Length: 205
Length: 211
Image (cartoon, rainbow over all chains, first blue to last red; front, side):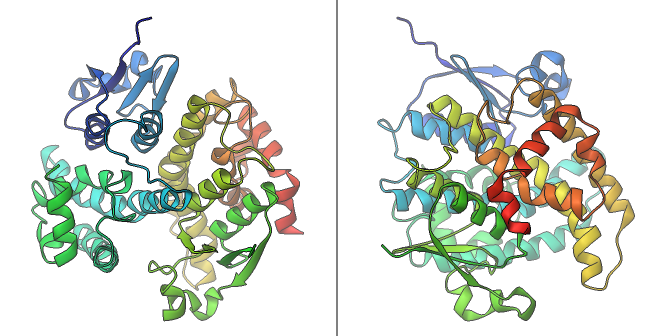
């Protein structure tokens, strides 16, 4: 019986794709990478829309299962491969609940301002537009408030959900990487002692 | 066994979703009122439970948990053996539940909540509706609902042939869109979305919130 390898449709420049790649590596899972050429609009072609009607990357195929939404994909991988690689879920029901909680915090409180900052400071100029500084300002304000809460949390807990690296920390990797490098907003991280230590730790895995 | 404590507000969409889940799972709970109009959610007592200062938050023994989508996931797992099975029966089914939960959280909720905020909450606070913002978000939501229409033409519920967390997550905001925003046509103009909405919104555990 030949086990089909997981197929990952995505693009290396996509933060969501990067997150799934990171998870596959943490779980020591083999995969086939199928490049979706975003600059050529491949993600909007019928062939790709048949896999993911929302026309965004990434999407995975694992046997009969076709799955999109990067946060759902990493959750699936973390569960399916629970016995190997890093345990990203926690051991008790309570630990797992805290992982889910901080995953939701990432998805609803961290990601929206972070991605807006990325869009305004990097993507918009790349496409010939101009940065709306007022919007950037507003979102830095939002992110500051969120990171103050992270600072408090991480002063009591090594990682977001507890003393173990989990999906919740993993979900922060791609966006924070962009914030610190391309967006030049590294001070958001470095100005906070515990957030900085946490970032140094998770970004050096 | 101490009952689960839900700190929330009866008119909060996220609170109502958690209560509906508890009812579906046939789990006893105690509702502790967090009086939003008087700013109770921003007081130190509540911030000690949930530093983000939003409702709801639950306490189950030693566990304090917030983020309504995380709460219902926890309840669905902890009480997997009783009440409605929200997670499917296989790993693949569960994966599709999470996929559609993420679609709700990342594609449906942002425009839907913006519309509800503009039409309902802004005027409640004495401001005026930004019609252009509503227009823009209605357009976004139309595109998302077209995809739902296609999906629901092949599948009774979003994740498969079973009512799951993914469908539950849509109840509160859609209820407001249809009943408080005059945007029912978004739903009723789509045959399969309409059938799905009629089905999920007529569940007794949901209707009981409005009696």
